[in-house]
Picture 1 (cartoon, rainbow, N blue to C red):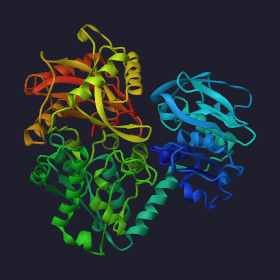
Picture 2: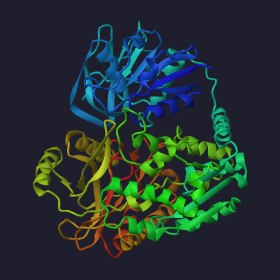
Picture 3: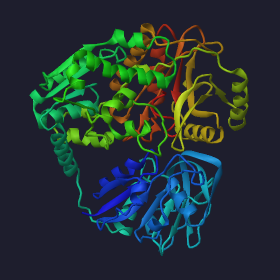
Picture 4: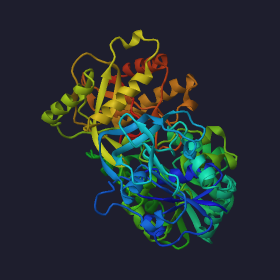
Length: 603
């Protein structure tokens, strides 16, 4: 079977590249740069793809490959960091870009009869960028294939050596013709045969489950989300209900009536091997006074392990049990899942206590190399309903990472300096004194948001979403201190103030109420299926002693990249009016940030 080898240089999208190659009907494997330098190339490998990465190629100890690999003779495609690595290794020059590019960009192709990589494409292309460094001089023998306004070498090639590089990310869905570019490389340049299909992957996963479980019983934490329900279904089908046991933990940080609905849905599927545990008091007590988002994530994740132990010591200590998790690849890579990756955020299934169990060989994760769209495909193959398979993702830590906290005053002088930088780019934008997690150039950021206000927003029948996206991208690219941009929908009269707030039962109930209102409106407007995910965020930004709500609807396939959704203004205003009617809500914002530079969740 023909194969493409993806060399993981620490990028957030390394496995996404493999996902996209598999979608073309060609098997793709992942390799570390150290492994690919160890002579593992076999005859089935028809081409190499170098991934992106968070480091700079000219830094000490940055990931690299040997010159032997570049001279091996196989077709090579470098993406982002991989593109820069090719240039750097072969005598070109890589420098810090004058402007960092995060999000959408337009490139102009320099097409001729030899440019197979861009076969069938028009001269202008919309692509997805996420980089700070750029190739400033191409190596001898290379020619520039594409440029953008801010990136001279957006693509390059040496046709004789069959080596190509692109600064943008063709593997993400928001590069409009990214799949066509990958198809040209995999099928035309590498000459791969299309002899792989998803059923083979499901068969391989099923065999792995049987092998790893062996004669043991399997325990699974069932959140009720897509990943855990699909995995619970697969485990029951392969091993039988007497070999599988699930626990759903009500953390008190679930959506309104979430745990009741999860239990009902799983009972309707015939699963009586599920126990529901109410641990809401434990979670709220453990989170008392905790503000830092990473600390919250670790406390929530570690407590999951403690609750398993409270239920039964045998599960964690007996050789008769193996713990199973519905971990998918975004959880892994954002938690610094590979040697060269950056820590974006610690997912609940990658906290220290779970890492200990993993190191002891007591955990299996059948979906750990899959993305959400692939898990949904498996769910459909298992016969699960669209209502279950297409459910919006919900984070393991639940509303714990959608309730922002604060226990100290903001440095006003820092904020004023940042406001000057923001005003120089967009005089109508204001910096707000709250912070959130972002991902820029495959690195974690923790920065402020800017907010844009449109006067008389209610007088507009439509919003110019394209202009707002352009303004958002321009602000986050040019101002180093921000990683998000929001649109103000409504606010009470007065000045913004930052409150000192932690997670409390009252704040959880307030967000549950707001979240429930928003989801009901979205369902009624028949927009639920057109929005990939819609976090509702509560922030301690006050005007009249209350707090603020941020709407974060996004379009994505696999959570590694996303564009903010464009909800009709009529529905936005309906949502806003309903939220502003809640006692304790002072303002409503709409997050108009793509990923990158902002992560989907705020924490």
